[in-house]
Amino acid sequence: MDIYSKKSTWKIYLAIAGIVIVILSLLYTNYLTQKLAEGERNYVAIWGEAMQVIANSDENVDLTLPTRIINGNTTIPVILVNLQGHIDFNRNFGDDSDSHLANQVNKMDKKGFQPIDIPGFGKLYYQESNTLRLLRYFPFVQLILISAFIAFGYLGFSSARRSEQNRVWVGMAKETAHQLGTPISGMVAWIEHLKTIRENDIDVHEILDELGNDVSRLELIAERFSKIGSVPSLDNVNIYQELENCRVYMQRRAPRKVHFHFPDPDTDPMLVRLNPPLFEWVVENLLRNALDSMDGHGSITVEVFEEDKAIAIEVTDTGKGIPLSKFKTVFQPGYTTKKRGWGLGLSLSKRIIEEYHSGKIFVKRSEENKGTTFCIKLQKATA
Image (cartoon, rainbow, N blue to C red; front, side):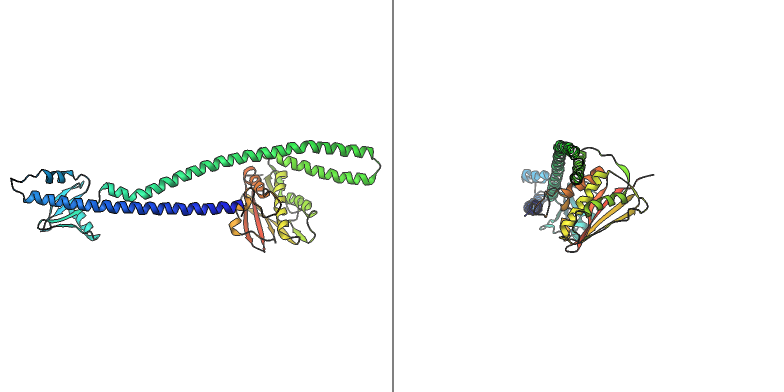
């Protein structure tokens, strides 16, 4: 199991754990609200009995306790309806007008509320206290706060991780360019020296010319790495000619049974804002991946479309394809399906296109065992 499959599995486990915590919180809060609701109903029943005692008492009865019970209710809204259906008393309702109180009674009747019957005295209607009402909302408030905490924490850690990754990327790229510089300079010097001491040897010069081409390629690679982390200069470049340069280089190194279908380089120029060495790196990465997925036979097609102020470049192969669930994962550092490889090509490509060219690169479509289409969108050059 690769690191991204493990990551997805852990996300599922965390989601399940979060759902379980929310359910348990809801169940426990519901248990508490039921107990509190039962306690409030019992208290209202005692309150009604206290009202009954006061109403039926004579001068010799000590009313201290009933009075304290009645005055002690400062949270539960209560309405006393007598046997004739008239409102005799209310408590803790902000608006104590008869019309408002009657409206409250009607609402409770429509909701199926069961009033507390005080025999020979009347019926008590009541509403939940603010404490009970707030307790019912507590799980949702708790869920919102926990979600906000997790979201801000995730954003903070993600930002810090991306910043750290960027520093590692830049450091490795520049160190690679620096390490390549010294041997490349040495190789250039040795090639020139060999040409001098074997001036008349045609075979040696042919070999040295090929070595020179390889060294030039190494110089280009070093230049590409040196541009990682710095702001590259963008020029107005004919996209057809740039794609042709990539085709010529890659087709020489591809199996003969792989056919390349690229736009005609003599088509009317279409100018795009890009950095040629870095853009060629991206296209070469896509072409290499396409070649690896086709096992030595198939076709690679590149098409260019104009979309408003952008230019879309689509690279389509007839390879193994990519599962829908991996469309975004393929751009993650370290993701690879090859036995050998670091899984950095597409990650670098995404960085080059999106961060340095302010464009987009994504998997447009793919079907397993039929092929994949990558799409690059770049800014069209202005006149």
